[in-house]
Picture 1 (cartoon, protein in one colour):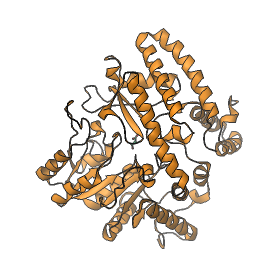
Picture 2 (cartoon, protein in one colour; picture 1 turned 90 degrees about the vertical axis):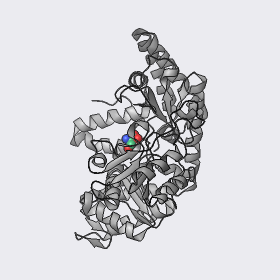
Picture 3 (cartoon, helix red, strand yellow; picture 1 turned 45 degrees about the horizontal axis):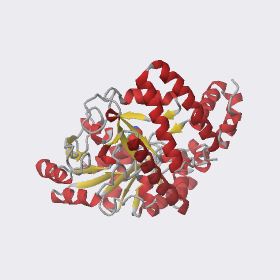
Picture 4 (cartoon, helix red, strand yellow; picture 1 turned 30 degrees about the vertical axis):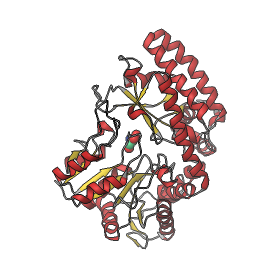
Length: 440
Ligand code: DSN
């Protein structure tokens, strides 16, 4: 099928499509449609980004052909001479970027990085402390049916839930200490998927130290901001730092584990391979090295500063339009919008669906203490990493807030109003996107 918007494709996808059209037209057609979707919609999912052509290129190479089980200089396969150098470069750049001594770049994902980290620090049945998923944590931080909840014993520390508390919906650091004193966890985990405020790693370390626990910081969401110095670093407070590489860090989809402790580094290496993984994805590791190289450049700092400015601009504009932002705002790249302030009837599920009709992509998300179940929710999570990559500034973020309100207002009115308004907004979104093309 002919692609209606060929000019929207980034050159890598375009070149790949030329080849695939002959080789596998069915997949070529679907990739072309997805490329159009990404190019013509506004991506507000806080954990997504648009990578550079260089990062994308590195993934689509012959590096995928190779088995390289083991580590540089100690592989279980021959022919790894260049793979050793690539992995070494990736490790060195990760250490330089985050200011640490040891990095394992092999985890296929953030959840697998957390699996390997936990296996390095705990035995089955051991207790660890974390924030529960519904308050902004991650499923690999102790969700019941996840490995972390099945094989270990999670205990959760709370946020400040009282509405009149000045720190409403922020981490209750005194309670973190109290939970640690009561349960004596082996590991304390901080770092979240839906937490809009600065994390005080020093306070977490104090809580961990009091009971002799190891502090793990999962900085998946804020890794780019940390690398750019726009959010405080978990080092030297955290003993182990895990992350994904594809969110604010703007690399390929994957995971990373870091530490300053040589003994821990050895354990982590053993637990990544052969503990939870076999052969590393060398094409992704090559691409991680490229992304780390990009993040070391001064432009990346400017990008991350703009990410934070854009998130603030969006949050402030939404507040003006009558929405409540949990914790009263954002310090980082994301915000949780409590939709009930706009209308008690409004759910996150409806908002996600209606906004997608208009070309604005986000995800429904529970807000702290949400009375609605996860499939419905009272909130949406919005983030600025992807829109900032395509060049949006504060003005465009304010425009997005106004579109969001028009769409949700129309949805609350009637299905007919929703249909006509989303059509109008969809065209306006398309037009804005065409003036801010994706990175090439
Ligand atoms: N699923 C990711 C997110 O959207 O935050 C976390 O891994």
